[in-house]
Length: 108
Length: 115
Image (tube, rainbow over all chains, first blue to last red; front, side):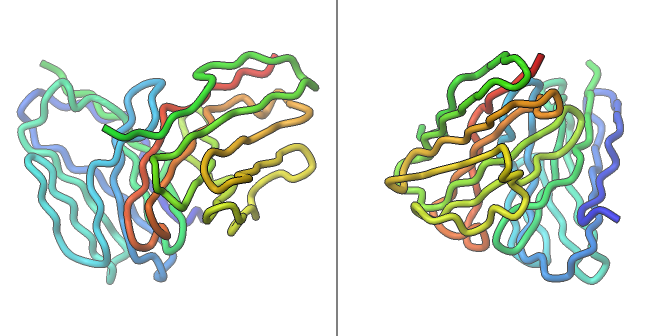
């Protein structure tokens, strides 16, 4: 079993939809949680950073961490075609462990 | 805006040849990471530096891979000899303190193709 599980998709939604992306993990020691966006042939770009449990909101993006369930989510409201990318969850203690990434396409 | 610089962006090399990648982290960032990302997968940590010291190289294939950060600033990752299975994106990331304290920022990566 991988430390971090993420459904690779692909996920296709119409413009304006609410997108829900999720990851589960097995290591209860993980303390911080991140979401990265990666466009094709580019490096990952940090979207959200959360320490421990709770919610964090930044514009159209909301990150949720439920440590009791070992489950994290990223919600994208009013999705745009420019949101089309691969979304990677990452988490850890002293370094980052990544999920496989979910490929998202937002269709106009 | 400060960013992590990597070069080259693309590299094609023949099997058994040596190849090297360079990374210049964001100024002042003490922690530097090298990750490998195979197409369709998430990045996997190869090596982590704190200043000039290696703090984690448990996943680095030391028979062919080496990494250094001599002055605690920029870093070089070398593969010798390269194998077909080394074809991947090699990503460098940096953070201002230990990962547990703050977020990390990635460079654009070096895409390696071994033929």
